[in-house]
Image (cartoon, rainbow, N blue to C red; front, side, top):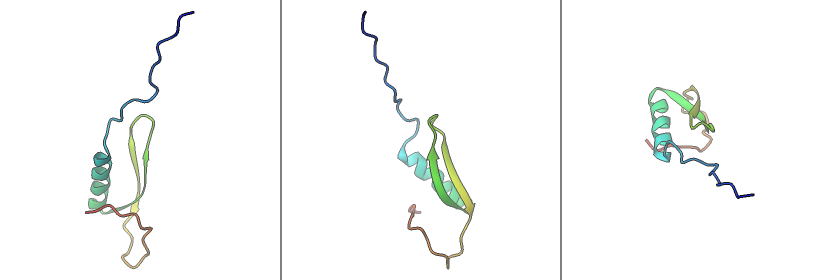
Length: 66
């Protein structure tokens, strides 16, 4: 038997960390609060959102610089 050629299981991501930050900033600019970010195996960036909180409410500490 001859050895099979190994195929890498991980492909290069189609986006950069800057792309994710840019997407989060766009969501915030639209007036929504970001509650989570998921990157699917197909490379889709999913951002969980909700209405913007009141300034009186406590933050979870996750901050993306403006």
